[in-house]
Image 1 (cartoon, rainbow, N blue to C red):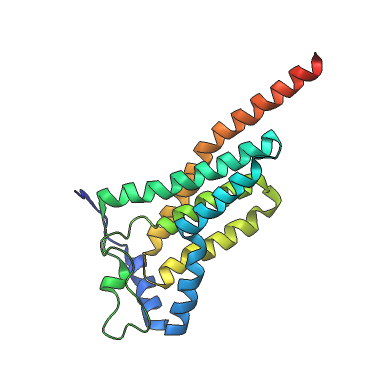
Image 2 (image 1 turned 135 degrees about the vertical axis):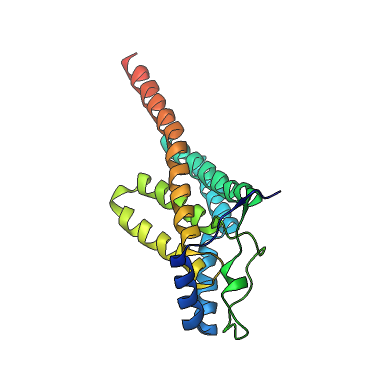
Length: 196
């Protein structure tokens, strides 16, 4: 049973009105195609493939692949859990009139908060930024663009996307501590063996 109701902010409504007013079927098709890159099934399949390929790599690479897989798994589960408690109407149900201009209905009508896609990409961008710090601005720019497609297709309010990305990044940071301690203990074992 949902116990928390979160209304959209006035800024959320303004952005959704803008998106509804200025969209076209072509924009909707492009945004829907792009949003698949942040889908939990796609990211899960990629992280499982990376995990499988890492099994014959060195210990650090295996730990990094373990971390990526755990990050994707937890960031996939968390939005589903939160959606059970939070009641928020999706903008495609209340901000689009009779002329939908290609806007399709997304998921369950009261599952706007948080954006699962944004949670996933926030977690993955944070993990990739840890693995490849020099490319962090690129990862965050691409992830932010992917997450904002959810606003363009009126599946989520902008605040759902921002909170989702922040949750994903925070989740990855919490899980990162486990991976870092595993890497450190692995380095300690190697040093101990070399001293023998």
